[in-house]
Length: 343
Ligand code: GDD
Ligand code: MG
Image (cartoon, rainbow, N blue to C red; front, side):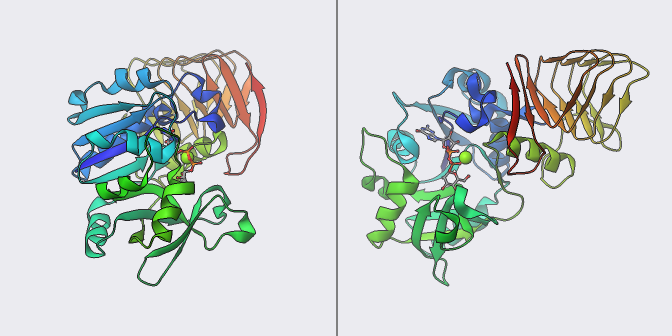
């Protein structure tokens, strides 16, 4: 069985991070999220992937190539223009198996595939949608289910008062290839706004299964920052890929940190990082590979992307910093507002 990863979107809510990077390639504790996702699905028994790409596709292709170096096989389905979430699946039809898995590649969840597949099989479902529960479902696809888990209504991003429940589409589906008959070819089609409602209206067996554990859509700046906080708090099954030097301090190789620097855990320091005299780094801070922090600066509750340079004598807090931008987010909570964008 193959997994199709939807990774072609523009990632507008994660700009400026996604101006040069496809959203799923945004690093999560210094490793592209898509890599974490593929390795997790591999651990669940999936060895063949199709990645549906469009925006900045070359970066994904160059990183993964044919998947060999990650111990999996990867093919690409390149859309001529953005075809929407169902259009992208239809476009990949020739590459898919009779039963396949679809994952929105910006979703952080360590889904357990076996119980999901068993549930799908037992119910003879055409589609099984992984679900999760959130407090405010208005940013997501919301479902109404029967006691047996069958979905009788799917409504995408309803106003909060009109949401039929707080169970939402977690962005993970098991699908039978027959379902693709109901997706028109050659035009933009949204699985959430068009395909799921059509299948449900026609009486096809569409089921919903609650995924376990940590779940987050990392597609906004504030959620991206909140995700790092959660990872460093150990709320999510993701670990920095470096050894922990001390409790809550992870450091990569070839680092150059002045003796008088204060590292406040939790903090992750990538490979080749330089931190100058008198700096304070942390808590809740991730410095990407080859980041430079010039003397006298402090940086907390922030993610600094590979290659970025923090000028000396500055205080950075609740920020995402790239080589050519710095975005301050009011506070690392989900609904925080973007405050300043320096370009
Ligand atoms: N190839 C391709 N082509 N990929 C696409 C396209 C497209 O036209 N449009 C979106 N994608 C990819 C995005 O890159 C992303 O990884 C995934 O599909 C979902 O798109 P988002 O733009 O992130 O959607 P969303 O977060 O607003 O809503 C979706 O995810 C929610 C869960 O986080 C919906 O599926 C909701 O129903 C769901 O609750
Ligand atoms: Mg999303």
